Amino acid sequence: MKKRKFLLLAPLALFMALVSCNNDDDALLSPIDEGVNMSYSEVLNFKKDKAKYNPGEEVNFSVNGTHQNTTVRYKYLGEVIEEAPLTGTSWTWEPPSEDFRGYMVELVKETDGEETVIGTVAVDVSSDWTKFPRYGFLSQFGNISASQRADVLNNLKDYHINGLQYYDWHFEHQRPLPLDENGEPAETWSDLFNREIYLGTVEGFIEQAQERNMASMFYNLLFGAWKKDEVQPVPVEWLMYNDRNHNDINRHILSGFGDIQLTDPANDEWQEHIFGETATVYENLEFDGWHLDQLGNRGTVYNYEGYKIDLGEAYKDFLISLENRFPNKKLVLNAVDQYEQEEILEAPVDFAYSEIWSRYQYQDLARVILENYEYSNGELNTVLAAYMNYNAQDGNFNTPAVLMTDAVIFTFGGAHLELGEHMLSSEYFPNDKLDMSMDLRNNVREYYDFHTAYQNLLRDGGSFNFPAVQSQDVDVKLNSWPPVVGQAAVVGKQLENSQVLHLLNYDGVSTLQWRDDSKIQREPLVKDNFSITAEAGRNVSKVWFASPDINGGASQELEFTQSGNQITLEVPYLKFWSMLVLEY
Image 1: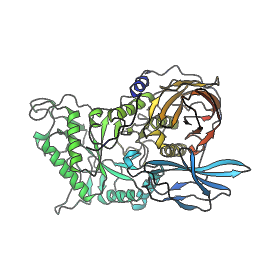
Image 2: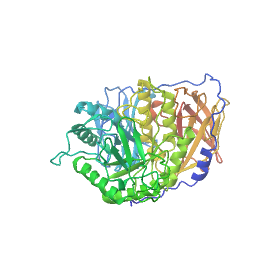
Image 3: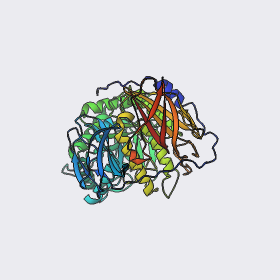
């Protein structure tokens, strides 16, 4: 078993109870014009060369031009740790040696004594990508050139995607990598939907991902045997049945493409077979691990001998055996709609992964992440497969819906599986029916910069709490999470030397349902320069502000006054999501 360190999340049960206390959209408010919508875009196209960096590894930066009187400012959680003048279009920086740190690097131009942020980029220094997983996907493995692969990976690198799920790259579930008569991998094969897969493309993606410090995880079911013709793919004794007399095989029907027969995950012979096939994959392709999938609640199921199968225990047994067989490879198993997640997270997986179906509201996304914290004793971070604008058939994704969903997931310490060759809108990853507008691309990049730069506040321990926060402005209404239409929700988090206050804005929105199937979600009403009073609890030494919606997520120190346990300050800006940090 992999060792785990307990992180304190003391008020979690209370927080989860409050997260689930409001299940309906409130009456919608008429929109009111207020606040100034301050759009932000990069001036110098500021980039770095890898998705993450190992301790001691240099970061290579680039910009597409220079401006006079511009400073490169390196920050850790709002504190300047180094700065230097911008003198060219490329340079290197060696971050501090500490492991598992996120940094924000700002390009700040001074004009007549006034500073303007003209570029930001985050840097993640982590020896293990699964500590702060930012998961993406690949779904096209045809005859794709090296330059085309580089374009895809460079784009994902700019979003700091540090792990990739290779979706439907394989041949058959029970035989993922086909071999020729000489025992060598086939040059091409067809997946279960008859798409042609090229070995060289899979190999090329893995190699080029390694160059960018991006991990590669191969996708496969943990209990699938694809039956596309009359030939039985595996012995019937390995299969899972809907009856005690092994007459009705439990299967997933693929109309026109055959069936996936499901095996008993705890069957020793099935495990030996699929582990042998997995060894073949690892011997021929440098995958970093296995992204395992299941198919949700299968009802009451039996093995060939007629005994009822406890799928949660079977999953755990399979994962423990798999980790023992391949101790140096990463493991993650999709908990479809949280099915058997508690048992899965008792096994040696490297992070939690939840595909969301029946949890419809923003507060439900938070609850799933909190459940996963609890099931893993506060250790594992979560990736949510949450498909946006699911029922929409064409056009662009709705930008407000995507950003509001990301804001909730990121606030509660999760990550969102949504980026690959395109943005995800369904569980079949090659489906690219919806497009990302340029505005959405730019905004999501700022959100991923923010998510990465401040990962030590967002995803590195701490306890969610409920400090009292009140607005001094009659036009700004605040409430503790969960969200209420017409107000901004406050999410508190207590860390050792700081209190974090997240403000998530739901004033002016049209729904509290995150998926936004009909693309009706509206932008919330912007608030700026409004005063709040917050419960501090201790003497505050510094307050700073940052938001992915303004200045590229750059931090800004704020003035404040403190009287006893109360602190008063002015919040510069709130569109979708803003963060305040009170340091002690």
